[in-house]
Each structure stands twice: as structure tokens, then as C-alpha cells.
Length: 196
Image 1 (spheres, rainbow, N blue to C red):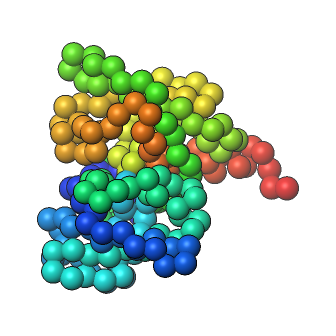
Image 2: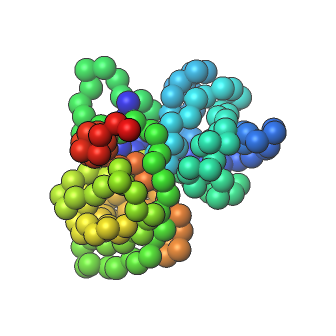
Image 3: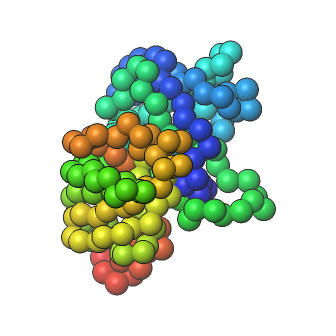
């Protein structure tokens, strides 16, 4: 489980393909603290550390992960938001994040609000893809509060600290991001629909 509070950024150093899998080698300040078989969220995608070499570590994304997320868009020297899994007994500063991306969204608008920055995202609407005003959403692994909520569209406001310390500082209009909708909202939506 994760919280959506980003610890640092990791930089992609190499990417290779093996069948339908992609192997990513990242470098980050936390590499020395990682261990093989550890779960780490990369732009909100839970991936397992499978190798460590010096200041770099390797994770593998399978076809299902590549189809559901924006990981396939990464290029060498791109940075991703990084969060290690929550420690038992630690504070839940963000919200409950599983690291299981539901879909991707496209950034369609960025507005300077003279103190914060508004990002507007558009996504394909499905029954479990639910946002509510003042509810939680995870965008590229960052726990955020929804400001505006419409069918297939929502906005968030980013404070300067988050803009500087996450990938939001380099996000551009037209970029794809990973979305994980609030897990409680997904369960409620499923219960309302019923099991068929």
C-alpha cells in the first residue's frame, strides 16, 4: 500500500524489451536503501525491484501494465515520481493508494493561478472511474484533491512545493498521466452496480 506522498524522483537510464515485457533501469537517491523483491510506485505504478547494480535498480513491466499505464511513453532521462510502500505504523499523509493504475488521462489545460497551478485532465469515462469534488485522486502517483469534477474530466490545484518536487513541474498540455481512482469510490460503484 502507498500514500501518494512522493519521496523523490527517479531517472530512467535504460530500457530494454524482452518479449512483451519492458525492463527499466532507474537511478535515484534511494537506490542504496532498496532491496530486491521490494514494491516501489513509479508514477503511481507498483513495480517490483528485480535487480540492483550500484546506484541503479531494475523493474519489469508486463504487457498488461504497459497497456493500462503511460509507462510505455517513458524515454531515457525522463524522471518519474517515486514512492516506496508504506511502513506499518507510519502516518497516512495522503490517502489509500494501491499502486494499481486504472487508466490514463490526458492533460488538456494548465493555468497559473498566481500561487498555485491548475491542471485539467480528461479521461475515458467508465462506471468505476469516479471523481468527486474534494475527493481524492492519484495522478502519476501523487495523492491530490479533486477541485472540479465532471464526467470524464477533473481538475487539481498544485502548490509550488509539489510542482517543484514531483513531475508536475515538467508536465505539458497533451501529456498522458496514470490515474488511480479512490479505492473506496470504486468499491461503492461496484456495489451499486451489483455483481453480474
